[in-house]
Length: 151
Length: 151
Length: 151
Length: 151
Image 1 (tube, each protein chain N blue to C red):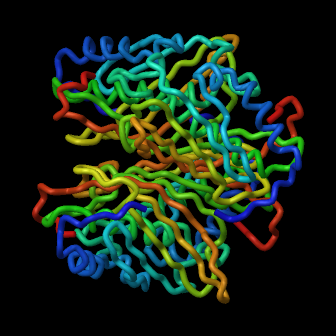
Image 2 (image 1 turned 180 degrees about the horizontal axis):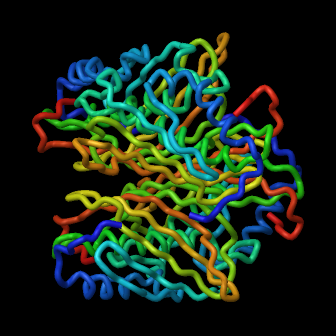
Image 3 (image 1 turned 90 degrees about the vertical axis):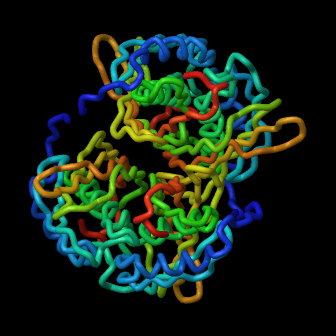
């Protein structure tokens, strides 16, 4: 990954505050982990309430936290006063998401003035073993002209 | 959409039972609506607990119910004793998801022995107006050889 | 599909001129068909030079003409002096592309100031029968600030 | 990338023969480069005949060679007598493809019995500089039961 220089010196605080306003993600039980320019991690403990019909973590849950990690990875490189919106993403499910917890990572592949391309992945930690369960490729929009949107 | 003939005469019961085992989707407050061969609808009332940082329904929530509608649309055309798994999907977010409720639809574009290609969309109902907020294209796997997976 | 009103009264001429500058697409043997606001068709006669290892039309050829139809569908709704660039697309291959010719269609799902979301498909015409061989969902960028790019 | 063990000891010969039967790819001027288990490279010299309306290499050309690299990366891990078909792929265009030549790479993210998930990228070499111009994520099918398909 290239070495990115943030345009917003206060990017980490903005991301951590924005994360706490994401009620859905916080209600899942997710916690924001590592935050650096162009790279963000989110952790989610396994919870039976978040499963699909076969007892695995629901693909929608995995998608939500990887998308969120990608979105904040993009936001970390935006100018101050910007907000991030997901334009689109594509995710491949590689293995059932089972174990003690999920680590989602998002990182910037290509920053841009209006759109930022990101990659992401989710890994399940199961009895000390780590297994990639999903990979994502997505596009994030830089929103500058809507002061009502923060983060 | 072509006129599909189900291979499992009991497909609707299988889908409705499977839906109720999807704890995550049920906990969101979603309800399974119309089910017919190759076509499924899911409804979700707006809930502040499901929002992202700007107060819109979280993209992950939208994705989860559209994916679920697509998955069951695929399952409706599978032989008895099959289960469905999402291989991958891509979703474009078109507009903020705001309003009283979301209607997600999934339908089969191309059935196949091992994989089934689906399209889906989510519409927000806001003060009597209906607006498409997301469109999906995805690939579902037919799982035949794992008796522990149902639906 | 909604009824779109073009912002550029001269959109069709711009698209037809741009098409002829796409050397790769013209060299494939493709012809621009129907052009209307938010909707474009491209036709390609089958040619053995365009096949993959099994004798079907190459997925890359199918992708190129569907992407091109989507790009011009997006361009048809842009203001004068705009150019179009593909941000990303996802395509599912549904059936081998074989027959006398391929009809690719692209249409706008959601126009926007900076990005335009499109859907597309390719159908093969084989002995009087028409079969959908691929479906696409993609995102196009409106390029305004680069006068050296036309169309 | 994990260290993959090929199931077909003769995988490289199968891939090199299959490549030469891809008339479209060969006609583009592409050459098969490095081939190892789960990893394949394809090189393409810039050619004005392959450009789009702004003089860059056409997105369809880039897509075709990255898809081809991904497909052969998948084939390298399949059992003897298998063939590969692209189920779907998603590609993000990151920068205009301009320069002396393009290096496309495809590698396996997750092998499977029926489907194999791959990532890919294309880099442009321009006056000694290398720049990533596209990234792909896609799904390949293992075709076992159709003896008329080779490679």
